[in-house]
View: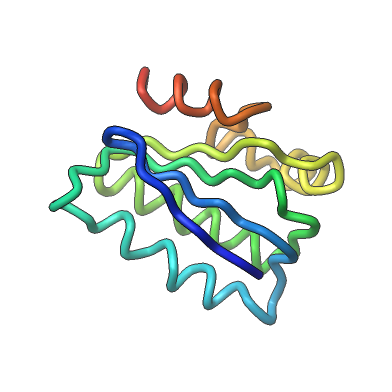
Length: 116
């Protein structure tokens, strides 16, 4: 799994690429958790762009749940976008659409977290 970040204004965008499963869920979580604690960059929202995410397991879903809880705890916006049909099915079946906003593309995700 490859993880990169970029910043736009007060929003941190995390680009997730590859497979998010039991083997790398901990490293993904370790990569995103510090983003919720950043105060210097004044990050007020995090968007996870999943356009290159090929697969997600229950261990991967757990990381998104942790992210949603950290965002709530720190009064930050949090959303995911660009889910492939396979990954979107996993999010839908597990009810994650009720936990966090799921947007079809990056631009709508940026608008969603700005309005939050």
